[in-house]
Image 1 (cartoon, rainbow, N blue to C red):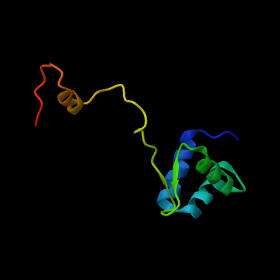
Image 2: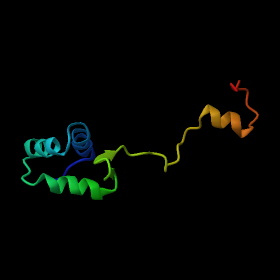
Image 3: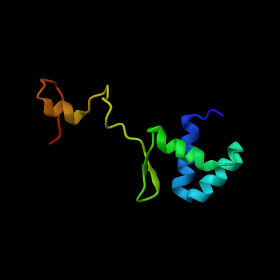
Image 4: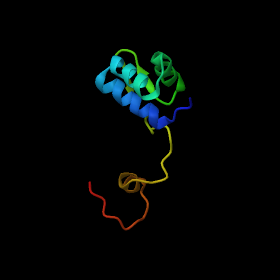
Length: 89
């Protein structure tokens, strides 16, 4: 059975809000999987979602490592570019 990232996101939401047992029950009910531990383990090993063992929670994926194609006003104001933008200090 091939699962999508959006499916993983919903499983993680249930895991983080309702706990591990409820996530296992959700996986059993929604996907008819007998061993939901394998799904959780696959999500942990995927590298897409980070898992914090201390808090027993999945962390939201961050986009901090990717470059944005948009530039913010703060960056424009700090860059020293000669633009007609009134920067708030």
